[in-house]
Length: 167
Picture 1: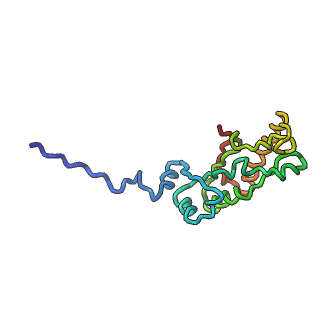
Picture 2 (picture 1 turned 60 degrees about the vertical axis):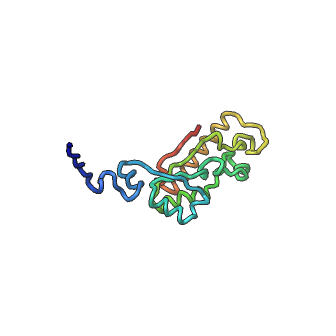
Picture 3 (picture 1 turned 180 degrees about the horizontal axis):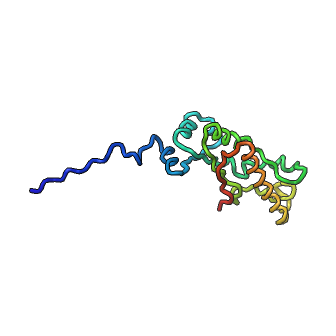
């Protein structure tokens, strides 16, 4: 009969592993820990309270994608021919993040699956001829610069990175 060795107990609590939230643990090691938020959930008090306590980063579900920001009707009236954006819903999300000290991952500037076909057509119409490559490049460049400038001007430092091109 050999005696069973007595195990050495772990210190309680394990200081390098214990935090009051995953958010704190992520921040301790320099990581962002995020979740999605949408125009409909930004007004949900229980959901936003959970975001505030558990996450240090959020990503808009669709509200920062081109098809959500581009305004076809106003783009058709644009005096310089450049696209016009409507930031109302995206601003609510980024404003919430700013108020709560949460970073925003900007998602996404260009994504073929979420780009409006009319963006590439003459007069921003649904059935017009497609514009030439130089016009498309000018519109995309303008769009990207305007979106980034808007969020950096209105909410300085809140959008900490951008997904530029998806798929």
